[in-house]
Every structure is written in structure tokens, then in C-alpha cells.
Image 1: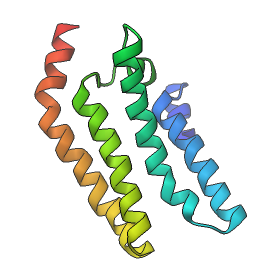
Image 2 (image 1 turned 45 degrees about the vertical axis):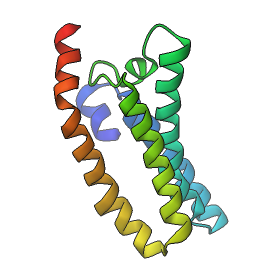
Image 3 (image 1 turned 30 degrees about the horizontal axis):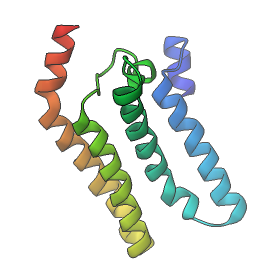
Length: 133
């Protein structure tokens, strides 16, 4: 966050929220000496993104995530909403049923590729939305 601030004189919302949540949950993990706070961070972040899409789709005329993400990417369709909720649920299932080592490996070598693969399949829709704006 400091590097982005030094280079751009502003911090985008997503890294700022991520930094705050990492600091909060990391601090709680250290203070209480309990790793559960780190385990639930991905669940909370993905659930918040899913809820923002749900709220934006059904309760407002404008996408809520557009305000958060800015012009970087449009995530307005139901697929993204379901994807974020599925990631949250998957994280919960893995950390609650597997070892800590398995969860760490899943988070690094499982979640990140899942996100990249899903995003790759959405590129044509993202491009279409950018062209139509």
C-alpha cells in the first residue's frame, strides 16, 4: 500500500480494503493466538463481494462493485456473484475439514488458479461490457 501511495499518490479501494482486513485478521490471530481469524478472511472477503453484487443487482440501478473497483473491471453479472459465494463456501469447507497445511496449500495453489481460470473464461464478457460503456 505504501508503494502504491508513493507511486500514484492514491490507494485504490480494493487493495485498501484488503490491507485493512489482512491487518485486522492478522492482528486478531496474533492477539488471540488463534488461526481461525486468518482462515475466515477469504470467506468474509468473498461473501462481501457476493453481497455487493447481489445488493447492486436487486436493490439499486447501479453496480455497487463499480464504485469499489472503479473502472478496472466490470463484475455485474450473476456468474460473478455465484462465483464469490462459491469461493466463500469452498474456503469454509476446506478449513473446517482439512489440516492447516492443506488449507494453506489450497489457498495458495488452489484458490488463486481457480480465480484466474474463472476470470479467463469471463474475458469475453468483460471486454464486451468495456466496449459498451
